[in-house]
Length: 123
Image (cartoon, rainbow, N blue to C red; front, side):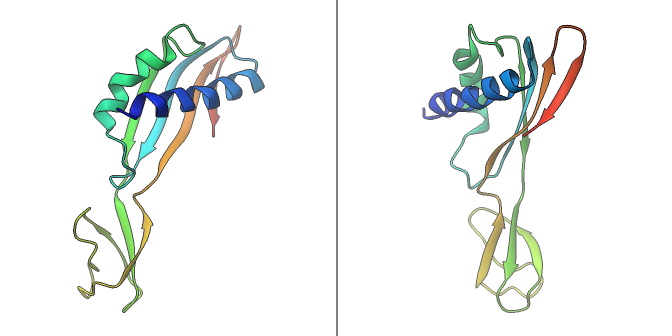
């Protein structure tokens, strides 16, 4: 379960953003995950509370946005969505395609609390 180490690494980023914004708490963490990232969203959701226990994000909610796989066709130049095991152009059916997105995991935004007001930080 490498999702725990991913959450621990993400916590370092969260703490840095919170520190830079002088936040007293983190209420929401939004991440974007592509199907080819190698990260299992369900396992990430389970590992998150363990990783953030006792930290500034201990009460934070983890929102996971699943991203589609996007490809560009080397034959017709069209862009389309694809599935993980079928990276074929949605326009002409050609198999020589280039991956545009779907292999990423991004810390997209944080909802922070400063002493008197809330602030959303975008990473």
